[in-house]
Amino acid sequence: MASADVLKPDFTAQRGHFIFTDEHEQLRESIRRFVTRELQPHAEEWEEKTFPDWVFTRMGELGFLGLDKPERYGGQGGDYYTSLVLAEELAHSDSGGLGMGVAVHTDMAMPPILAFGTEAQKREWVVPAIAGRKILCIGITEPDAGSDVAGIKTRAIQTDSGEEYVINGSKTYITNGHRAHAIVLLTKTDPDAGREHAGEARGSGFTLFLVPMDAPGVIREKRLQKLGMHASDTALLAFQDVRVPASAVLGQLGKGFYHIMWELQGERLIGAAGAVAGAQRVFDRTLAYAKERTAFGRPIGHFQVTRHKFAEMATKIETARQMVYTTAWHFHNGQYPVREITIAKLYAARIGVEVADECIQIHGGAGYMKEYGIERCWRDLRLNRIGAGTDEIMLDLIGRSYGL
Image 1 (tube, rainbow, N blue to C red):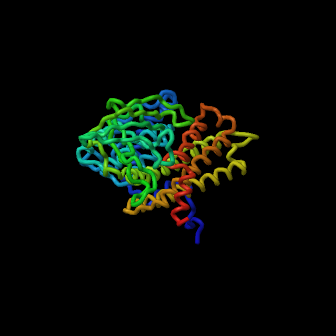
Image 2: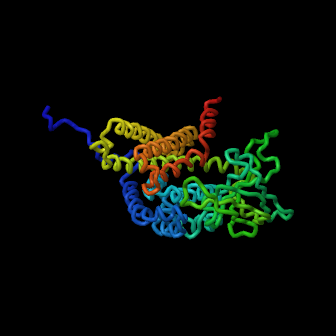
Image 3: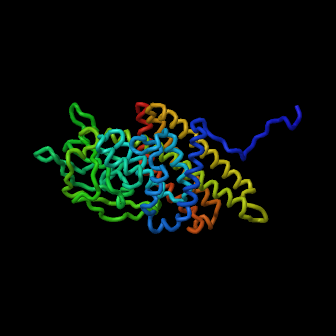
C-alpha cells in the first residue's frame, strides 16, 4: 500500500457526537457568535457589577431562553440537547456567573412550572420568562438547611377560608434573587414534614409555591459576597407574612419535595455539561499560552512535564464529556438515569476544578494574577462541587443506589 493511501489521524478536525445533528451544530455556531460578540467583551466589567438584565431581554429576542421549551409558550420546541448546547457555549462568555444566572432561569426555575404548573401559571410566568421580560429564581436552600432539603423551616399556612396561604421563613444563596420577578419557593405545609412517621414518606408535607417577588413581605435582605461567580447576584431573602392565593401552589400540595427531586436531575446534568465546557475553555486558553510562552529558549508546552499535564487534562475532560453526552441520551429518550446523572455531575464538577487548578500552575505567577482571567476560571468552577448537590451528597446517593 502506498504511503499516500494510509489513513492518518487528523487531530485538528472537529469531531461531533452522535447526539448532535447539523441543526445542533448550526445552533452552536449561532450562540457562540452572540456570546463572543455581545457578552464576552463585558466579562471583566460584570465581575464588578454583576451582569445587567438586558442580557435576558436580548437572549429572549434571539430565542435562546426557550430552546427546548414548547412553541405554544414562545419556545423553540427543540430537544433536550439544545439546552446542553446553550450551557456549553455560554462558557465562551468567560463569566461563570452569567452562565449560572441564565441556567437558574432556564433549567432550574422554568422546568417545574412547565411540568407541574397550571395553564394560567405557565401563561403568567413561562411565556414572559422565555421572552426575557420576566426573570425567575428558585428558593430551596436556607441558612440551616442546605443539603438536608427535608430540614427546611419556611412555613406556608393555609388561612381559615382556604383561599390564601401565609408564608414565613428565609432562603439563602439564591441566584437571581435580587433581579427576579418570581421565585419557585419550597415550603413546609405540614408541621411534621421531614420527619419519619407512620404511613408517610420522608419527603411528604412540602409544597412548591410561585411567589411574585414584589409581594408584600418579600424582603431582599442583602447581596451576598462570594469566592467566585461574581457576575451573578446572589441573595439572602426573607418572607414575613407573605400572603399568596391558593392558586399560587405549584404542582400537588404536599408533593413539593418530590417535584424538586425530579427537577434536580435535569439541573445536575446541565451543570455537568457546563463544568465540562468550563474545563475545556480554560484548557484551550492555557494551551494557547503554553505555545507562546517561552522558558529556557523554547515554548513551555514543548517540555515533557507540561505536555503530560495537557495529556492528563484532555483525558479527564473527554471522559467527562462522553459520560455527560451518553447520560443525556438516556435522559432524552425518556429514561430516568439518576445514578448516571449523579456520577456525571460528581465527576464533571471535580475535573473542572482539577483542570482549572492545573492551568493556573502552567501559567505560573501569571495564573495567579486577575488580568489573565485564569484564576477566575478556578473560582467559578469551584461552585460546581457544592451547588445542585455537594460531592458528599452525590457520593452518598451513588452508594445508596447500590443498596448500601
